[in-house]
Length: 102
Image 1 (cartoon, rainbow, N blue to C red):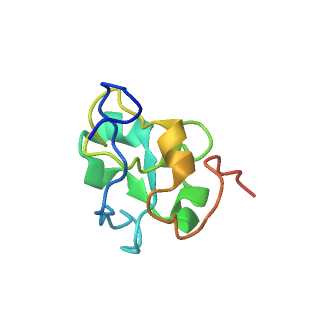
Image 2 (spheres, rainbow, N blue to C red):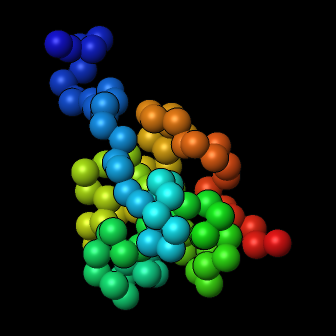
């Protein structure tokens, strides 16, 4: 299907929310620490729930929502801010990308 004589391909949405568990407490994870990902090398070793990320050393420096993409965890890919703003699936905590420590 073409959109207004446009030959570009568009991703309208993804159905499957990733099912990652927080590395600290086993609750559903919504955030990824990119510094930990670089150190550990595995996406599943670098995902956190909001509460655990707030206590994490890299919370404000190098963390963000787990991107809605099959490329999550691929070196150099941090998601698309416009897609994150669309919130294809709801972020349970509905909180900002930046996590300010108390």
